[in-house]
Image (cartoon, rainbow, N blue to C red):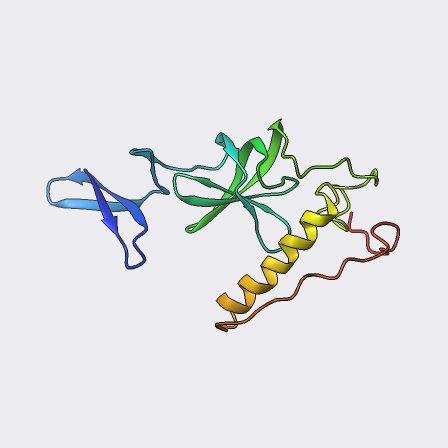
Length: 171
């Protein structure tokens, strides 16, 4: 038996009651509703998604059945094939398997270790877009965590030296 429930924030979730024997049941909550079809995300599943945004820390954000899925090495508007590697209650983590259609925000990273060492997480995104996303993330963090309202975040100041200034590598 599947029941659609709206929580306080008006996000739909699906509650499935699994009857094991007369009068006894277990409750299981799935990821959400996608186009009227119930989607239960599981580790190892493969999905074709569009990356909607960048999350704090540089991971791409996609949605599968209403659930947030975080993916490294993707840019907003990328269409990608991903594999779920970890499922949590509120979100899932995935890895990029294939870039199906790259975003117009993508550039070829000049560093051969981009995506491997972890030092330059956004090197494959055009620098002007990086500045926009960083400005927006500061504003979202102040609003969400700092609970600050009615403020203005000024434009991010661009560096005159975009590459060859870092001394951090994480292998």
